[in-house]
Length: 318
Ligand SMILES: Nc1ncnc2c1ncn2[C@@H]1O[C@H](COP(=O)(O)OP(=O)(O)OP(=O)(O)O)[C@@H](O)[C@H]1O
Ligand SMILES: [Mg+2]
Image 1: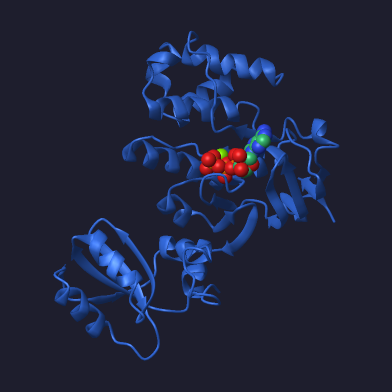
Image 2: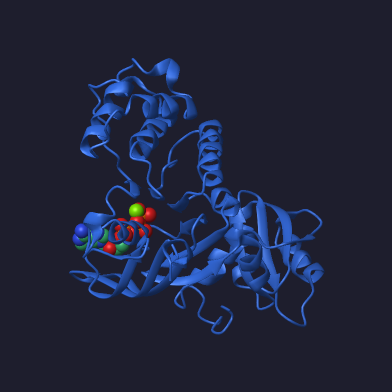
């Protein structure tokens, strides 16, 4: 198999344990060249552990991992220049300027004559006007763009991003996403942990990790279709009371709320009209219901439902 036809990332039976916790359990995964893949899942799911294994910082307990055809961590030394890793807590040198931070990373990676590359990255990330500013004086969004610029100085082929836009305002998140779009056009492979489902939705594929297990992988639309049921949406006031009543209703299967917007599915043989009437009879203000396609959030909630939280729902998870 030549280099270009190999997957950028190949994982077989990856297990990683820490004392008292299995952070990754029998993970299998291929990421193709040029793919943009989102890694989602609740806190502690194993996202950071997976990315750290891929960049050679943690050794697997079991399984095989290869990046760009090189076994990891055994031959990570050969990959150092071909992989970029933006950790969850990226440390800038706060007392260095934007320019100086990029120069520092260029030296760490042994990039010679990095000047033109730095100009291109500053322009690409919109940081040129701020190049003389100390990192500590940048906004959250600009800090993350600087982190990305530092991660790209050695022109990696595979980019591993750990929640690069967590806590960043929506406008900066959109700019960040456009920057990643530009990298994809140049053929880069990106694996990005993200807590934002709208970001996951824009990726070619989404992976869902929970308790170290890969529960699902696929394009967002396929994951939604895999739920196999239509969701009912109603606006409810107060939503907490509506959720409590719906959870205890034998007619209702899955429930979740985002503010006053409540999504639920009805079990066979039951009708949304009857469910809404029950809510209204109990004093909940409820809008007319409508059918909506499941959101990625609906899928994730269905897949990560714990038996202890849903005692009578065994078998409802696809
Ligand atoms: N160095 C470590 N030593 C011991 N336990 C660890 C270590 N790193 C991670 N863990 C544990 O492994 C599990 C997975 O952690 P990980 O940081 O990979 O999750 P995550 O999905 O990145 O979570 P978050 O969304 O909070 O960043 C957790 O239970 C965590 O406590
Ligand atoms: Mg993490």
